[in-house]
Length: 65
Image (cartoon, rainbow, N blue to C red):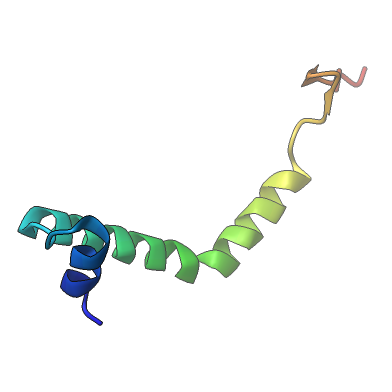
């Protein structure tokens, strides 16, 4: 089933050209983020290693004298 037929069944009308283009761009962006998954996971793990710890909703005192 095509996007046009699906939209007609859900919306009761076909998508406009602008709506179809927006959908296509959004789908591409989601695909790009999903493909970056392993790199994003690695960056998140690396950032967590040097993050400032928080206690009671504020940064913990990390001053070492």
